[in-house]
Image (cartoon, rainbow, N blue to C red; front, side, top):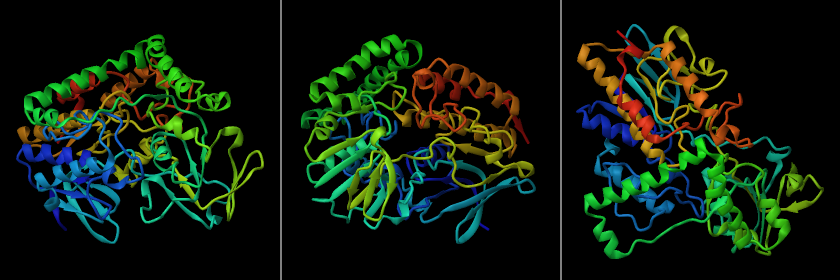
Length: 485
């Protein structure tokens, strides 16, 4: 059985950051497992029309890997190019096994190593496992009545069929979140009919995009200038936490009023205005940035169905709505999100004394620094519980997690130990503090139900504070919070 120092599960930005940090420490004995037949994660998998990032590209990138971005908010094709640029520049393909679907991982006390079981392939072992499979990697499609009977085309946005020609077709998009908000304007003009099924509306703000001029791109190849732009974006975005956590009044004045004006400016029909206006505080659900969504909804061939006109049943030929309308359809697109809270890790994890991570997370997912859990030594979870970020780049938090992961690994080498495990009381103190702080945020008290929350009602997806606070915590490694052996 092959054995490695570390196994990284997932080859998206989380896996890439982990690999780069290991290489920087001189650790080359690692192996990346990717369940798909290609590397790259989110921006290589999500190829739906209109896909783009909603954080400024110079910040939505790995700090040590600057890039010649063409615009402030990069589109999917450029993000895919960037992802592959990072992979190839650092020779990560040579350390990756694709089509490697992890079915289970199990801790072996005698060997002080994790055994990683692969579907239809031999198992491998490692001293450390870094799970970087990502929170937005397991698509969810609700069990609508009659879903399997539909004889037209259907797929989730995560698995967009690029060979399917949707032009002139009768299309339904189920869901109205971030992905749907990008797809709708991209396909509306070419669709015969476009029906959007909205459970609840999202607040939408204008998208402040900007295409860099050639001379600006030339200037930004200077590392110092690029870093300065990155820092300026970072601190501008960081200020949003004041509204999200400390002053909902400020949030309403600064952002919600702007969102209301955006509706009034782009939609004249009072009925449609009412349908797209949320009844909760802005920020409680993910804020959408778009200048094109509302104009698309105003098109004659586009119909927005709110929850009173929701889906009663899917039939062989289309959808029957709650108010009795029978819609004949050619294509159903499920823009219904991901299991981003209760399904943070999609495979069984068996730790010490046959302890299962699923049992430890039975009430809700939790982890010390969102990264490690008692009973599961030498296991690190990238983008784990309460590490999501609602105001800035997710990569900022991913790179902060690497501080803790690398410090943990280095602490073993320094003391000739092989195993590190967070103490149960340390994890409990951390988790209790996180949820006490969460109570102050708009994600908990903003009056909505969102994918940020687990089934328990706890907000699991988000970190309740400034990202520089999390960075400070991850840099301040605490040996007393851990057991070594």
